Length: 263
Image (cartoon, rainbow, N blue to C red; front, side, top):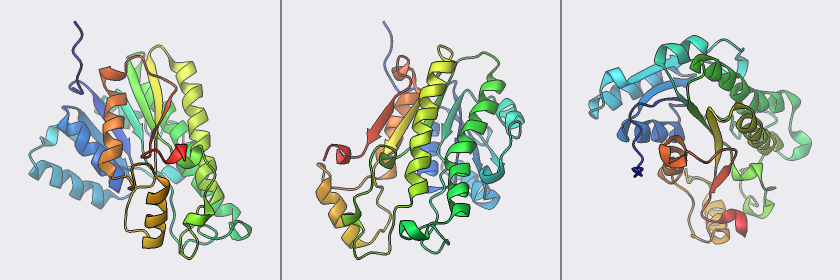
């Protein structure tokens, strides 16, 4: 009889945006379940410090590698050696361009959103995932693998502007559009790379990170579970899709949003 568990022993998982909030949680989850990790991010110091923290927590240094890459200017072939050297057989495309309220043409009304920022968001959130996936697939050389892309509920919904009223927060067009493109890329890759490679997405709802209290309160009221997400809420679904428990799941987008999308 098949054993059902989240054992990731024998899997080496590449995680983009590994030094960020969700990336760190995914890395720790994979290591806890027995998998090895290849971390990549723009910030080398944060990666180095994070690896040291993981080793101090009891994880073997031999199970953790990291590389510095800039997803905004990635070319096909740039990451092939990284995947081959670390022997990655799983990939989590987690990195995202989310910008800040100070970034020109980003967290502003539609009329003020600028083309340069739009292009950068699509480059990081969509094009880099295409590029990373190509290098990852080439490095596998026919072996079985899995890709998990991190999209968003805003790949599936338009923004509810009532949530943002009276705050300095926003919801740029490029974010939702780039994440929606990632969902379609997932379907394409699942159709194209099967049966060798499974490809799915996880669509988180809003993760609580100190947003304006008015926004938080309104968001909770729209969500059947009456709270925003934590990073740990999202990690379990990522680990499930990487594991043998999901061996017959591909081309799907699983919403981890406390039910927000049904309201």
